[in-house]
Length: 329
Image 1 (cartoon, rainbow, N blue to C red):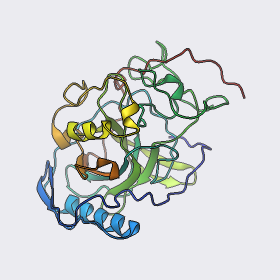
Image 2: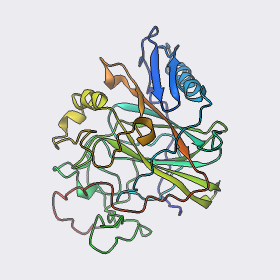
Image 3: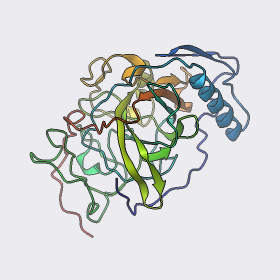
Image 4: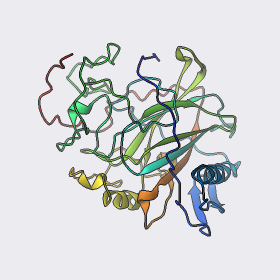
């Protein structure tokens, strides 16, 4: 993996779970390891207290069972991965949308123990269905990233497009069109195997259900040059329940996305196996999803395996809304 000179961002408190849950509400987390009752995830007066108490409850529920899990399904990387190695917990930058607190845990599928000091990476599109690094491509339905188009050439160390053109048949990358970095990040797992990302609920684009991409890197270490050594033991995707996506679609800015949405059942990549296939457990106020969502999942991986996600691209490429023109520096 390589490093980049892309700017780093601070991690302000975005009040992701402020007033998210009723104080008396008891939430049921059902996963491959059994059913866990999560109580006490209540509202707190201060934003920091709300974030801390709710997060602690979610982690406690995820850690409660010692039952081993089947390997989490390996999936394809897709054409929009860029290994920027942006070590940060808050990946939002200037994107708008429903706050999402993503709580991820990596465990060894054989020993059932946490995979400590591994690097977990995520990337996904924004509310309009656009990926950073590919804003000139739109979302397949005329969507473009808000704000002026970036100037200057694409990153000099961008992935090389494969034969066959942008998007790349056979698992290649699309050609990056800019050096933007929002909704991309990587973190090292703690002693319990957890990482937590602050992001926004993703939107959708042509041909795919709402999803988030992930990679788990093991055997290396974080250095001043980024993540060094080791390999990728897991490449997967996280999915959202249809009820949550419908609720989000009715609120701004998602309501402005006019692309026909692919449902979870229609998605050609989601294996339909619940948490093992990447389906997130979601906590949110069903009457006010705009207040924020917590998504959590435990990934059971083989730390010694190599699963880099090579293969066919992750769904149809967004169709450019106009022919890209060379950037002017």
